[in-house]
Image 1 (cartoon, one colour):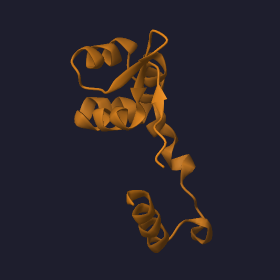
Image 2 (image 1 turned 120 degrees about the vertical axis):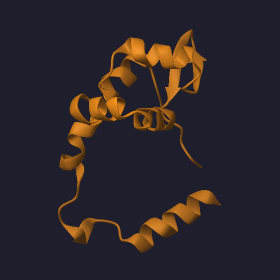
Image 3 (image 1 turned 90 degrees about the horizontal axis):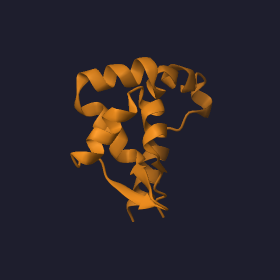
Image 4 (image 1 turned 180 degrees about the horizontal axis):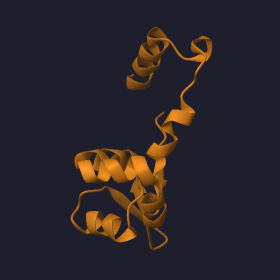
Length: 97
């Protein structure tokens, strides 16, 4: 079962290094999928990632001020503990079924 992660517009703005108005504009323009939970927008995280990759300026903001600035810290330096391509492929096949 795939678990969907959803965040609020303010959380999305913080995570992706953009102004909350940019997120709300994207919602208004139907660029992002969302649901409304108790009167509040909840945005699909996967769509936010795609949206952040759509324009170079968004990518730069994401990488400078958002979650992208931490990517290098997240990389596993010891290959002994990194998943092999075979393991990743098996995991992807399991998810698709």
